[in-house]
Amino acid sequence: MIVWIFATFIAFFVKGLCGFANTLVFDTTLSHQAVNSDISPVELLLGLPTNVILAYKNRESLRLKICAPIIVLVLLGSILGSLLLKQVHTGLLKIILGIVIILVGVEIYTRDQGWINIKSNRFLLIGFGFLSGMMCGLFGIGALLAAYVGRVAENNDEFKANLSAVFIVENIFRIITYTEIGLLNLEVLHRSIYLCPYMIIGLILGMGFCRLLDEKKVKVIVIIALIISGVALIVRNI
Image (cartoon, rainbow, N blue to C red; front, side, top):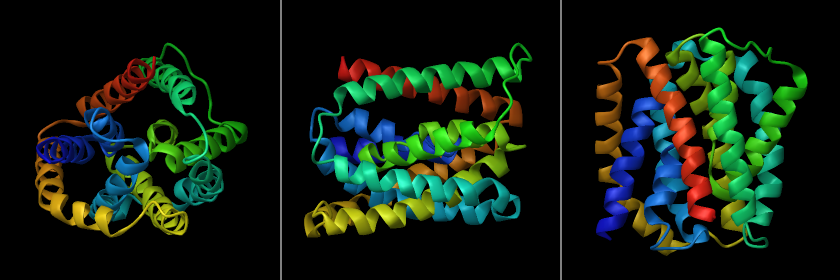
């Protein structure tokens, strides 16, 4: 249980700091302790209240034109992802996802530096939204979703507000789906309740540390988190 406590604290410190990547940290830390079908439901129950907290904290920056269309696409992707979770070998899929995440992180950095400027378009929204939903359903991973919202959000508060809003809807939907297919049970609930205090402490410390940094430094942390997330996925599944 010590490893679970450590994973929870670190994962939600990262969540408070940059608004996402908690799932990848949680999964990576526990990869040698449990299988994905045991890890994802616990992280899901811990993650929902943190998304509510972040969305409420940044509620003035919530933009329906950003989050509403993504929510629809994410839910469609989550249906497929959740159904595949117990059926497919996901190692190769995670490696591909890791490569995509790294490329997206590099693209965001180069765009911010003015080296490359690829405009957002409808096809990009559809691709990112659906694939992000499938990844959330399979692994609870929202790095691609974070990458897209990072493209269209004007500041860090808007990024966290809209990303958290999408995650809230996706989390609720996935809780229902996981319950229907038997991934959520009393053991998962008890473990999640036990880990809640460590989640809260990590989140508060992460949010507090974030306030000490300026906007540009937080953006760099988000980009670094994306790239590290991609590398972690590749290394774990090679």
